[in-house]
Length: 413
Ligand code: FAD
Image 1 (tube, helix red, strand yellow):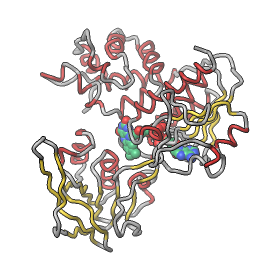
Image 2: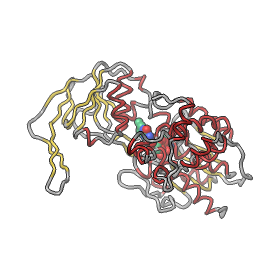
Image 3: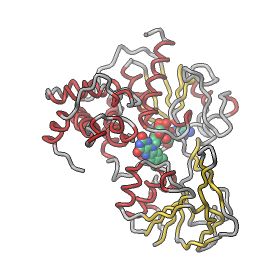
Image 4: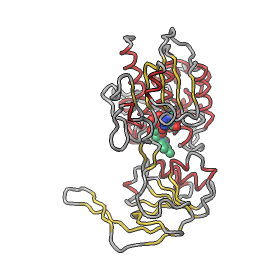
C-alpha cells in the first residue's frame, strides 16, 4: 500500500490521542506514539526524530520490519471499526528524514574499552549508546559487513541494504571500531579480550545454527537451511521446483526469495494454516508472490528426487487443546529439485570456550541474570543469543538495558 506524504498527515489526524494509548502499551520499546503523531502534525520532524532515535536507535528499521499487527497497529482503537492508524509509515517518514541528522555528539572520553561480539541489532544498539556515553567501542563481527539479520537474513525487497550502509557509516563516524570477518571463539577467546583490557564485553551473536529435521537424506547436496540460503541466495541454483519446510517468518522469506529468483516454490507445513507461526502479513505476501502451500504434511525422509511426507491431522481434546497426530502408512512422495529447511535455529556453540566460564543452556543460549550479566563478571549478553529467535525490537530493548547496567556499574547513573 502506497501512502503519500500528504496522506500521512491525514493518517496522523485519524489518531484519537487515546488517554490510555494501547499502541504505546503494546509497543515492546514503549515508543511514545501519541506524542510523535502530534509532533508530526505540527511538522516538528526533527524533534520527533530525536525522540524516536533516543528511545530506539533502530527506529527506522523497526518502522519497516516490526510485526506491527501484533504491536501498535494491532491494538489501535481505530482498527476496531475501520483501519488502524498507519503509525509505522509515519515513524518511517520521520526516521528517514532524521537519518541525515543522526547525532554525533559524545560525552567526555571515559578511557574504558568495551568489546561487542556481533554486529546485529543488539550489538549495533549497544555500540551506539555506549559510544555516545564516551566509551571506546570495538565490534567484532563474523561477516564482512554490519547488520546481522538486518543485512544477511531479511531479504532486500523487504529492507534496503542502503539503510544499513548509512548506519554502518554512522557507527564509524561515532568512532566505533569494527573488526570485520572476525569470528570470536576460534580466533580470540573472551579471555583474550579481557587480557587486552576490554573492561566490559557484550555477547550479541544471535542464532545462526540451523535446527536440523533429523531425518534421513538431510545432508544431500540440494538440501539447504534457510538462514544459510538467505545470506547469499544468488549463489544457489535451486532448480525449478523448491520445497520449503516450515511455517515461520524465516520460511516465508526463503520461499519468497526462491520464488523471485525463478523457482516454483511450495511451503510444506505439518500443521494447518491457522497454526503457522509466521505473521498473517508475511503469509499473505508470500501468497501474493505466488508461493504455494501444502498443510498437514510431516517430513519423513529425503530421497534423491522426491521427499517422503506423512499426512497429519489436528485433533482437539476434551479440554480444547489441539494435538497433532501423524497418520501411519500415509507415505506420500513429493518431487523436488531443491529443499530449504526452515524449522528454527539456535546459537552456534563455538562462541565461548571452556576457559571463558560462561554458562550456556543445553541448546546454546547464554544464561544471564536479571541484569543481563553472564556467569563471568563484566561479560553481558543480550538479543537472540539469550532469548532464542525473537524480534529486532526485542534485541534493541534488551541492549538498552545492558547499557543501563554498565552505566550503573560505572556509577554514571
Ligand atoms: P543477529 O541479528 O543475528 O546478529 C548477530 C551478529 O553476530 C551477526 O552479524 C553474526 O554474524 C555475528 N556473530 C555471530 N557469531 C559471532 C562470533 N562468534 N564472532 C563475531 N560475530 C559473530 N525480526 C523482526 O522484528 N522482523 C522481521 O521481519 C524479522 N525477519 C526475520 C527474517 C529472518 C530470515 C530471520 C533469520 C530473522 C528475522 N527476524 C525478524 C528476527 C530478528 O532479525 C532477530 O531477532 C534480530 O536480528 C536479533 O538481533 P541480534 O543482534 O540478537 O542477532
